[in-house]
Length: 339
Image (cartoon, rainbow, N blue to C red; front, side, top):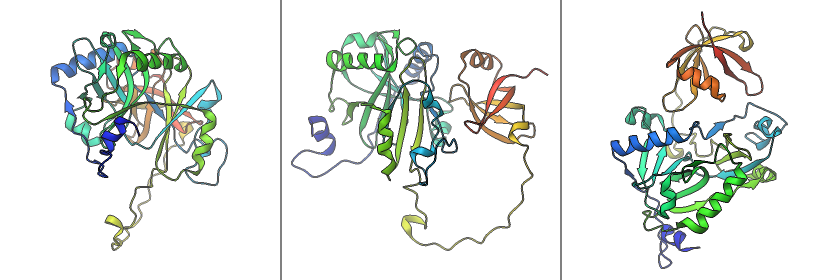
């Protein structure tokens, strides 16, 4: 166990382990506006991970929630790396700007966090020992887990004010991460308030086979070895922590069953061609789709830059043309609908 882990877990003389969440300091409104503007102007796409679900079955498996039950279609083109985590925290952005402390920007928020922050991201101030060169403008993809007292640096989007995410493959960006570790960063868990910082260590695609026998909650990321591409993600064993028989397994009386109300039959997916797209403020390029009767058709992600720009210029509620994607069992937006 290294020095950082000893501090986070408790000293060698004590068996105590601090499991209380670390209280992180929020930035003021002026600084937050400055950081968000810098982030949005530097990165065209702020969606880090695209979720795939177990309904996209390619291959077979008798074990529920197994790796084989998740979509393999994205893996058919190019090389991918695998990163796994037991943390339920979502990745965000670690931003270094001139004349500013490092700031962690969290976009993927819970429903309660969205209500409290009125559609704005959460920004936390961090303190790290890095060289002044990094403050020329550097943006990391990182996961901050205040409960487990950990910060994991996963990728680099902007390096000394140069956008390497759009021009360098993931393997090439890893070389910049190595330079950061060797030349520009001194780990200091005390300065970071007890948070242990680590560097993500991705594995090759063959490591997916090792996940078949895992029974704990595991978040899996599939990272393409290319430039300007989002990673894919899915969760294994999401229901592990759920309690089935009341609070803390106490048995409770079952509620009286309510009469089943038969719902009106919906239109076949392949027959729907038009929909209304409502922009979700906190998730760039993510829209909630509704049919002409106001029924939700689930969310749709836009990955084409030209279409993304066109939708942003059209407002928050847009009539769009849609197409059902059999591979992902979801609708996708294919263009604007002009009556």
